[in-house]
Image (tube, rainbow, N blue to C red; front, side):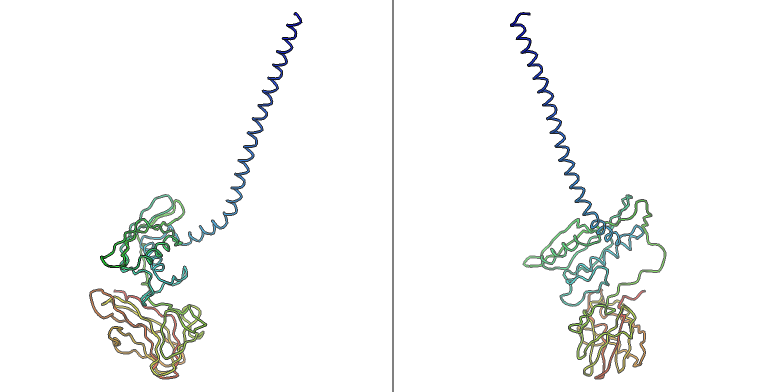
Length: 355
């Protein structure tokens, strides 16, 4: 080879060596870049996993709290009753604690929305460990603000409620609206668990107690009052001797003759009701059932036994009127006829009487 050919050969070999080195370097740089991307993605996954792990405990607690209100063994009637009680609880202006007894809201201003009728709903079994129960109901005319607040409460209910439909109607020249709701409750249970569709044979379910704060578990120590109860010419204290429901009873001390402890209930005209309670009195006292529209007691006055021990009482009465309309009744009304008389009462029940 000539000198020029040798120089050309050396240049070509050098170029080939540089190209090979550059190719190796570029491949290494690509591999490092891919490793950096892999490390970044793994770090992101690790961060997400740590965040999900931190949320796992509260999520499991929230799910467990919701699951306590569900059962694969409930019948359609039981689901309907529980859903009705929950919606009635949310319709009160002041919501009772979850799981507490739901009083009948019949005092003026006690309701956020008024729901008069409860038609039967429809149960759908998915076969995948959960069922859905859908119910339609309509509210009485109220403000749009009350409907919005009630809608928010439904969506926040621990019973996994879903509002599938809402229709608002308004009469001309009126500022109030009537709301028609379609609400679905999802009832969860273990996959493969039996899903009964009819009520099992057994005694009928007990009617809802309409008495508010029936066992006097709610007590205002600052004002010495029992929420849900009205009092006239008397003072109230708690009592531990005559306790038949809950932890305490209510003691009524008459400051003058004809002192009274009572509730105003909204009942259905022509319907038979039964009232029961445990009471002890040291003076003359009566149970009265008074028609608020006329101020007259029904069926006379039922005297209470004045004795050192408590007695169980039970009375039946028929709400005046007919046609199924609403009538305001003062029931129960406990009247102490003598100044200084003391009445201790507990475990009050007011229910529709069975046929």
